[in-house]
Amino acid sequence: MAIPVIDFSKLEGKERAETLARIANGCQEWGFFQLVHHGIPVELLERVKKLVEEEEGDATDAKRLDNVDWEDVFLLQDDNEWPANPPEFRETMEEYREELRKLAEKVMEVMDENLGFEKGTIKNAFSGNGEHQPFFGTKVSHYPPCPRLNLVNGLRAHTDAGGVILLFQDDQVGGLQILKDGQWIDVQPVANAIVINTGDQIEVLSNGRYKSVWHRVLTTSDGNRRSMASFYNPSLKATIAPGTNKDDSATALYPKYVFGDYMDVYVKQKFSAKEPRFAAVKAV
Image (cartoon, rainbow, N blue to C red):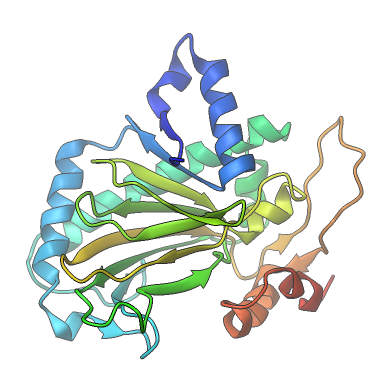
C-alpha cells in the first residue's frame, strides 16, 4: 500500500476532473498525499536541500525538543531570528517559503471546490475573513542515527493541530509513517515531491469528511533524515467551525471555537486521543 502520488499540473488540463477526484480521495481516505509537478522549481528545492544539509552540524541553531523524541529542530517564522550563516540562507528560505505559501493556498482552493464551498472559504476562515494574518511557519528537522531503535521514536505519533501541512522530506532516508486502517504505512520518499497532510482544522471545516491522520517518524540506525514541514494554520484569533455548502444539511459534528483556545488544549494533549480535544475546547 502506497501513499497517493498526484501530478498537480494536470489540474490545468483535460485531466482536471480526474485530478480533483484523486485529491479528494487523498483527503478523505488517506489524509496524506504527495504532489509532483507542483510548480516549485526543482532548482530551488535543490538549493534548499543543500542549505539544510549545511545546517545539520550547527548546534547553535538547533535545539532538542525534549528527551523523548529523537529529533533536532529549528523553526522559521516571519518574525523570529533566522540562522545568519551561510549568507544566502535567508534569501533562499524566504523564496522557498513563499512558494510553499502559494502552493498551500492553491491546495486549499482545490479543497474548497471538492467540498462544494465557495472559492476562498478555507483561507477566509483561517484569516477571520481577512481581519487576521494566518500563521505560516516552517520546522526544519533532523533525525540523526539512533543506536537504540527499540527505545525511542524519531517523533511520537500525533495529528497536526492546524490546517494544511506541506512537507519536503528526505528522498533517501525514510521513516515517516501514517496510520491507515489500523496499520502503519510508510510515506515513501519521492524525489522533489511535496507531501500534503490535513490538520485538525481541516477536519473541522469539512465536518469530518476529511480527517487529520495519526503519523510518526521512526528512528534509523544509519542515515541522517532531513525534513522541512511548513504549516499553514489559522490565526490564533480566527473562529473555526464546520463549513456548509448549498447542498449540505448535515448536523455539525464539531463545536465552533477560537483557534487559540484549541491550541491551549492541543499543547497539553498532542500525543493523546484526538476526539477529547474537540470536547475540551471552549465553544463560542
